[in-house]
Image (cartoon, rainbow, N blue to C red):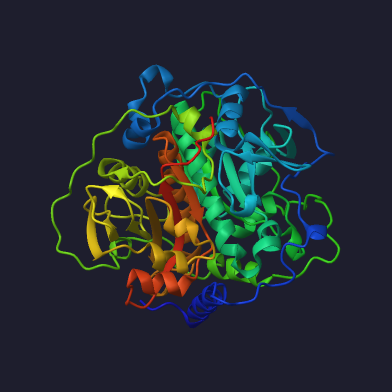
Length: 529
């Protein structure tokens, strides 16, 4: 059934935004971007709210990374599953997934790196904890402040549950769980540095954080339930964003990760229930004076998530598409899992590596990276036929991998095998398609993820645009952590000349667009975890 005309108009606007946000060789930069006087803080602190300091004696995640990524929660012994529903477990989860992991100093400037990558270290994402029954924490809504490793209480208990499940009877189950973590994005933080392209960066950053939360939870023995589609209006109201907030304060919730264990003491309703009511906005810092307006970013998000679409779920055949034709065959089978760093070491030691040696990767290393990254599954509302990503598809520029001919390869994730597309040394051509040519030339291999955007949106929902970027960020984070666990270097590539890379990939079908790139190789210097 065709979508209503007003929904098709939203899709047309999203497609127009995507083309307008592309990087074009020789295009002059926007002079407004990166003004030091307007730089947003990477931290938010609700200083006037009750503060709960998180414990710093944390649980460990000693399980080997690749074994966990390959086998999931079932690889843990029973004794390590379902840890206590208390503040120590929550603190361990938050630190491993999103904590400050490395102090970096350049001249007199000091900044902290975090467990998740972020374009330009802008860190647009925030985490809100909806606590229902966590020992040591009163039920309610809390903001996780990464800077002082604390929780700041924003709302009382039952109001948070009533709001998060408003209009969603399927979420009634949340009241039986310890809590839920909301992932939001502050639009201005990334727009300050990247302008119009910022929506693409920040949505992938949200994907990084969602995957980091899932991965850290699995290492701790926590079972999770993830929703990449939420009610935009009710979740913004829950975290206290006014409906008429200026662009600099807009902060949509992109996804949530629920602590999906049965609580022995589920949240009980109050003796006297109040009727549903609008929640008051929560005060935030004033927008910076002189901030420039990139509200087209807010409009494209609204076009993605606005109501009016009868079906939000994405099922086959839309989840089984490929930009490369191939003859179907039997799955190749999972590669052997080599020894690797512990999850704690890999997540804390993850860095963006930009300098690589000339040493080759092995074929098995590349096969393992592909397997754990793209066969890692996805989340509601994406329902692929198998355990694999639903919307993004990976190409690999292979420069130096033993046992694999140099050239362009397509990873057929449906069958877990690499397919040749074009042989030859493509370093020079790929370098020319990037603003930072060495990221295309010096790594052993470079992955680019593409997605079928326009036609998939027309057949399902405008939200496919946002979901494809979220999924690319999730896969990118898995690639980062897996590479680190194998003592390889990894660097995300968000800046590329879109249509130049698209031509280099040889994508002829309309609607397929390049989303995200990642360079992989043997690092010249591997930072200590």
